Length: 299
Ligand SMILES: [Zn+2]
Image 1: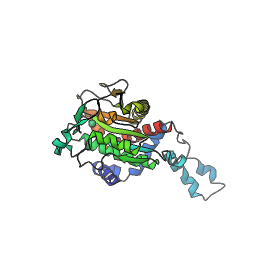
Image 2: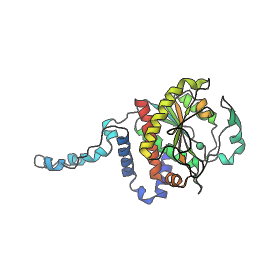
Image 3: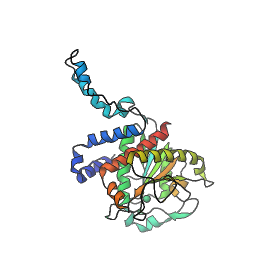
Image 4: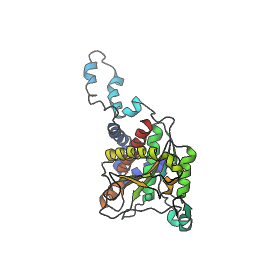
């Protein structure tokens, strides 16, 4: 929760117009999200009641104010749909990784191979790092999912530190007994490549095997919600319809809970890099990912 002020500051620092309107921005995002999750369509006729009510009950400011609440139907109709659910969010990389190459390059066992404990991640051409992006999106997700009733854990507590190793990131989800876990990333591919994709685990004759099917369901739910909520296209360069399956990622191989990675887009693509640097777009991503998780957990 320490993250909240940081998030708010980032919004305020980068887009002045968002400062006074954080609430309405959230409401707009929530509304879009609701539409996308096929919950009840927001009422389109809230404007009339004052006319019909006036002759009978001339003084009823509460009733005339009520239509405004349709902006958050999720809250008024089912305040905490994720009550009792445990979600682990893994913000990929860490802002301090570049300072500790020795610790970060230490080889760890991910069952199918040995690989580095972690990496620095990518960045946009103008230096906005993947670690900062994943941290911001993840902390926004924490806020959204906690508001919906979930217990949410992050695998790191700031964007100033080093690691943890990918083995530890998986272990945190396992220890929490997460109902769902997601590792948030953005890719660093060729500049002409664009679009997002979701990575799911493959069977490796290991502990992840028993959650491969659920992870696949989770991945499809998140793929659908992400496409609908962000408008970003399926990856033009990886996977099929934005779905990819891998057996070389420690964060997946070592998971005993349903888990996926999301690569939100390509930070080296100019159009996507520009979008990722807009706080409102990151909020859109966070809402979309939260909706995908919720859809998986509730169906
Ligand atoms: Zn990454």
